[in-house]
Length: 637
Image (cartoon, rainbow, N blue to C red):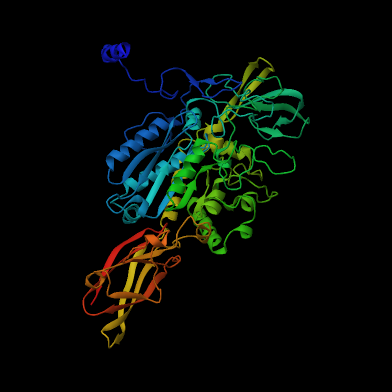
């Protein structure tokens, strides 16, 4: 006991004598000043790469947001913070999740906070950069952010959109992959979680590397008796390689790098390999199934929602079922892409819902100029055998969540739209002409001789894989980001919007014993274009039916025995789980289904009042995805 007392007395003195310091905040590679970028996770291959500063990227936020370059994650977060400071009544920024490597995933809510709660309004969710290198999508979210906020109060349509709706913006859902892409020459598909891509039991053991240190990982070509390629004889510059069949050519063309694991392949198992766009719960399939006779899905992850980044999207959406419209953007087909991914649309979708999707397909094409729009299973595979895609976001969006959900693809790889050299073909030769004319020739990295440690003399060069093949070059990105954002604005303009319509109270019968019957008719109108919910949303019960909430008050509702009565069970009352818990209540409701765009929904009921006095009726309208109508009152004398 004495020892315990002594220790208790000594402890405060000991604590006071120590110099306590908080743990330093973790610095990620994009934040520190070292020249090496280290990737988290255990793998059998290299986890560290030289940092680069790509000329297509703005790494530090400028004085204002422009779209002549792409933006690093720190720059994007700086601009988001500035918007929050500039528009405090319209913007909230918050962390929704943590990435695989521990980075925060940030999101912005845009709405007029002085006109209703965000969760009481129809909503949309726009996400970018699920895939590491598809950074054009982040730029489109940022363009939309800038457009909505900088035009608020200046443009009547934009002001109404922000006042009446809630827009959730997540520019970078995969910050690990985004930063790896922007700060190194390395590329990967989605999350950086180590994966065995080539089935040899090793994780990420054979990553492509930047051998000549020019900051870009391109291709290597070298002469080989069993080559598959020749230099295209039509290209006098000797840059374009033409595939002529296995063993029929003069050259091999492979990724820049070395064969780390001695399997005769180069760069076949780089950083990561899972696909966040195959990790959704709807129709998910494993990466390997046991029988050999069923379907599997590469990149699917260990289980549905096994990845923090996908789980963060699904959790947020399920917690906020007011979200009606979603676009989770990628690159590079280009295409307005949607469900279904495992069957033809007519086989699985309600006709009235499919009609809206096909309508938005055409709206999108009219704005962006994309040649293609439609479902994954049929339209995306046009001209090829239909191949199912499992665990896909748009399928979750419609079949599981009942929303209008696109997974649009931005940028076209500079695919030639015309025959620029007049040879009757639209091919890589035309791409070279476009690159030199519109892009200053930055898209093609000239072939340079290099002494390879395993292959001997090779040449390194080819198309820039990041800012020509996968994304538009800087200087070209704004048009693509803008057009995709304007399609998202068009979908916003179609959201439902409620207003009160006619109210009517009509005396229908009086009785000798001093009672009177009234018929009450309450109506609201959906002034928007979309119905208050898709039919699929109602089927899966992600939404409730539109509902009138009605409350009676006043002299005739006072006392133990109210002097009014709702007739013929035309209204319902909330019921407790146990009858014994029931209490007298003046609260009623009526469910009325869902209102089509431009349509009016009505609740009609009869009440009987006894004696003289006033009876006040208060009503509101509650919906899941079309917003709420504030309380309105009338008095029955």
